[in-house]
Amino acid sequence: MKPLLLFLLTTVALCTSSWSKDEKVIEAAQTAQYVGQAVVVHGTVADVHQFKGGSIVLDFGAKYPHEVFQVFIPKNLVDVTGDMHEYVNKEMVVEGNIEMYKGKPEIKLQDAGQLRR
Image (spheres, rainbow, N blue to C red):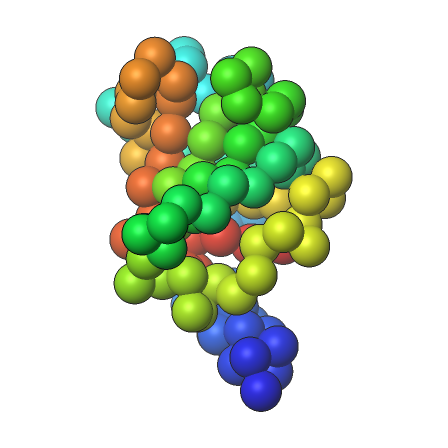
């Protein structure tokens, strides 16, 4: 059931997203240059960490502590996004505001539709 739900939610999000093909997509390695800005980021997931509390962090570019960018998925969105471990070494696109967290650029998901595979 989860894969079907994830597929449907992702499809709806892609169809209704404010992201357009005309927008500039930056690479994960460039995100530190865009802190404080809303961007669309493309990159390869190098590793996935799920914490005891349930939230997930996706490392892009390299594994922690050498990642160039990370995506934080709060516990309340984990059921919607599903098991992210299957996306290690796969390309993804994420839309959102770049913030710095412990010296690394990060997007904190507010909505599962911000993440696209």
